[in-house]
Amino acid sequence: HIMLLNVYKSYIEMKENKTWCTDNGINYKAMKKVVSVRKQLFDYWKTVELPVTSCTSSNNTVDISKIIKSFLVAFFTQCAVRQPNGQYITLKDNIPTYIHPSSCLFEKRPEAVLYNELILTSKQYMRDV
Image (cartoon, rainbow, N blue to C red; front, side, top):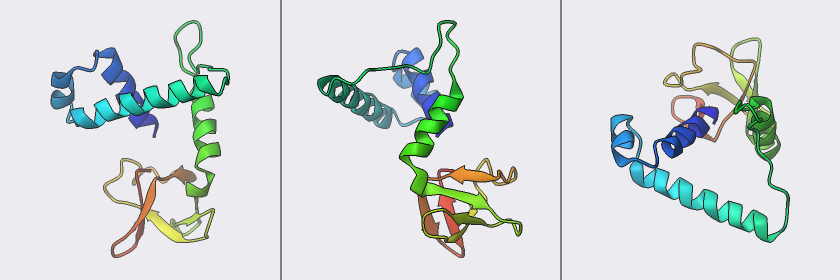
């Protein structure tokens, strides 16, 4: 999730450049959609008159802990905790699951993870950890 946020930030810093997307294996049309959805959300946020705050400080550093907290609040039903045997148990339904071997976190075995979806192959795997 943080990696996707970093991709978005880089895309914006590169002024939504199609060549940058191609060079980095990023789907240009998907990034255009991300920008559009973000604008829609931002516009909606303004119409309900809620304060807009940033996780970026005055010295241009990002407070990652605020971002992580917001993800966990929004997606608490998509969290899983590692068990002593190495598998993970989802918090919502107590489903035994695993980090997919193609994930960059597969070897790291974090204590807890946030995932986008579960997929069933030979085992129950978490996707987009």
